[in-house]
Length: 211
Image (cartoon, helix red, strand yellow):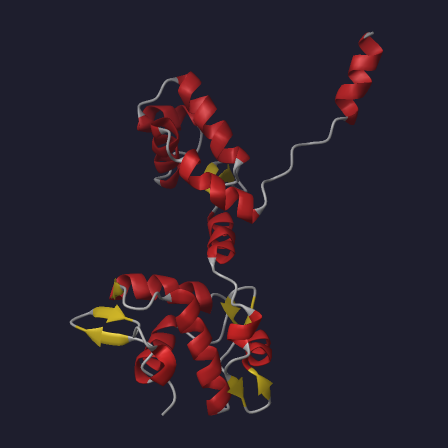
């Protein structure tokens, strides 16, 4: 009956935004379709509505609508305050934080600061994947810096300075420490080695930061 169908429609729950972990897992599939990549690139370059996205991306209206729908469903494209389409940068920051490996309890407590296990020190100065501030006490500072190095850089992998800065900026958002200062501390403590503008984390970090 019409009334029954109407009531069921009204009572149906709205689709929820994917959780960071599920959205992160879905990203490769999301951008495996060329039309979505082109539509996303058009939005990133300033196309604020579907018509402009279609024109800039060279897509049909139908393909544009489908691509934008998928991009919106995954939360990577949204509407700005003025109603224009924009890239959801906050969503990408959230996904970046979700991608960071969570240290095991054993690994976190293996190194101790002045007042207890390293995980307690880290939780005090690192919140939601961001560095609130560096501890004033040197032993605690070394614990926090070691944690950042281990969570950010793979041992033996080479990173250009631009990539190092991008990774460290994510830690420094809304904090008191800038990424340049953080990079300098990591180099000084031996967590990062620098040669001709290329950085790498030592394969054996046990000796880093112990001086």
